[in-house]
Length: 389
Image (cartoon, rainbow, N blue to C red):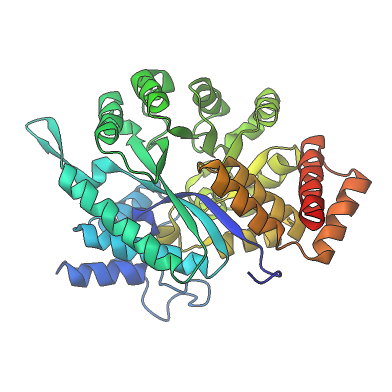
């Protein structure tokens, strides 16, 4: 990899949310479905440099409008081979921007469940066919790019605790080597993490690491509850800024927040649509481990390069700090240890001489939180080992 390019990590992307307007039109045509004229801006009515893959037309101040757009777009996905198209499109697009590791969120309920007389019926063959197509897309992207991908299974909390548990039980009977994480997602205010006790326990039995959505539109208390039930990472988690004792807990336990700047600006009412109200800089400066993520890249018109640029331009994250964000992502990745070590070495190999000097200067000046300094010293030791080795 070019030493000037910062390798990037995504720990939080919903596969259906990755569908760009151009891909949505392709799927609609493929599946002979009507494509509403009002769904997207017309060419010439939006900034085509900023939105390279088209732009959806929804009211960013209205959550319902966003959900309606998401549902419309998701409904264009009709067949397992559609998942090949969207997986390949998202991964190849972002791999060109330096993405070396990605965790994709998938919902078995949306992929292969139907309801018949109030009973959920799971289509095992459809699920396996879908994952086969996604696997094939990953393999094809890997022919051109050095990228590692893993899957998270999502339990949709607003569908109820029983469906969340049944989702995991379905995975217990349909395991896949790339499924390494379990996620509770959906409407944060639907139910309490205590309600999902059976699912928490089953995830542990299946050795699936937990990343739970919390503290996005709900309070810091939701993060505390997610941690109580064994969350290894927190999806979003920006409400942690409300609670200093929680911040200390995040630092002490090395819990990583999966922050998505563009997504948060659009969906989190407390930010009032202004990215500069986002607490990412405060959280980082307090020593919390953070990563940058796309969340629903297609719907929000973003990609990983834009998220890193936003952090740099709006919050003045330095090149060294962006490296730290990537390395925090690798450290928090739900991937086997030998692959984690390989990814870590790949990132460290991209440190040029200026980066090494910046690292030394940051350690010497002691201008950062002790938790950040500790990470910087670890990177320096590893770089020295690499040279001496």
